[in-house]
Length: 84
Image 1 (cartoon, rainbow, N blue to C red):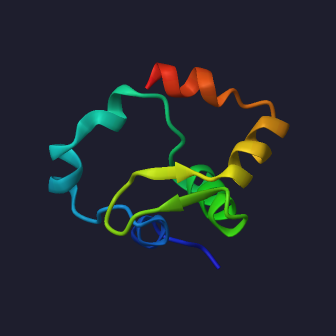
Image 2 (cartoon, one colour):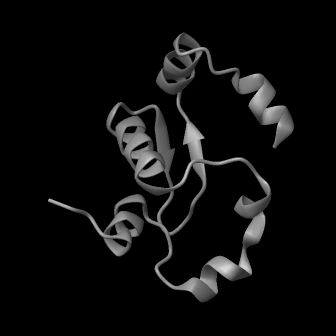
């Protein structure tokens, strides 16, 4: 079953209105995954309890399990955090 963009935003808790996104352009200046790939990875990481989210926010926190899993995948969290 195809998923439209509105449903994708709902799945990851992203704001539906364009006005809200234009008020906070920080993600536009940083590298990030978007679209179905970003939504799928986010969903998978939440299901694995690698990240936690806050309601009505795009902010995520990496859990201990997430740190271990991302390290196993070769993701350097220290480098990513220092670049943020």
